[in-house]
Image (cartoon, rainbow, N blue to C red; front, side):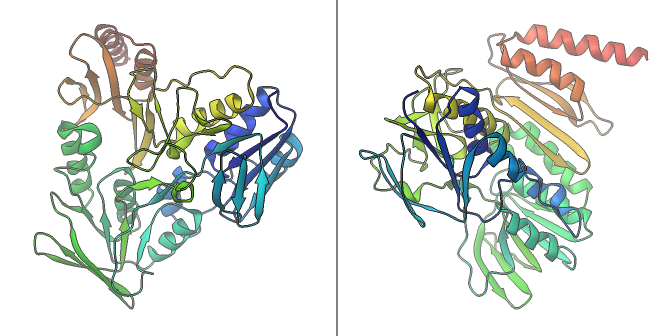
Length: 407
């Protein structure tokens, strides 16, 4: 082993898996994990999903507290924030004092982008923490009109949750369609129709000019000149890596604020990063990449933890995968969405695509998206992960669809 003390900054999904990865690598030294929140490490995807569907959401812990002390022998320090990092002397400065480390894994996640708001902000919220989800769930009990700003994954899920709770919902989208930036216009138009069928008013290609709150309401002025009054405004306009505390650390930072790592997730001698904070040259395509999804945080966290204590670090390779829940439907995506080479393999009763392939124009399958297509999606996902051909994926789908039709 290279040292006897691993420090993990961030009691997050990536942080938890970094600790577990280090132990699986055979590390027997001390592990200290600090987390800015007072809550034990918890699962974040439910915050914009099932947590918003009922009046009394329950926190979903990633691991029971005794797992950290008994199974991992981790010194878990909650309510402690990182303030600065001295890479040369291997000292982490926190709100509870300095910590010396042998190796460090940074897994502080990301922070939601805010909009300037005139007046009190209790009616304007983001979805990032357990406390955020509790506030939104409570507000949805009485909300009559919810305005969601941002047409990405979080915004789409919150708009769906608002309709499920009986509130009117307006979704403000800067792009030509929800999720169009991630998946292209074909999928984006499908999402627009889905929202509208469930009663969401979708406002496309417009932005917020001003946001004012007073008492129990908020007023949203749009760039197109229209005004919206709401009981609750939810911001889902993206996030930035939570790395402001590293400003003077000397670590190389990307233009997006991420920590630039090598293929092994190492940013400097003894310093590794994982999850939303990290960008790295993904060997699957060679491009500098930052992945903001649950699967990557888990896998990348484990690899960073292993590499932080290993004699010979191993490159981290990832194929993007994530899911979202909208109106009792499960959407899954894997790979890269290439709008120039897209083919719809299957459609639902309304004619909307429920299985979509993305190719590279040269016979290679590079991405797939499915709606309620668990079995088909799982089979095709394996091909994406294994650099499978477009033709092979199409043959699998045709075989499975043919078999299903005969049942």
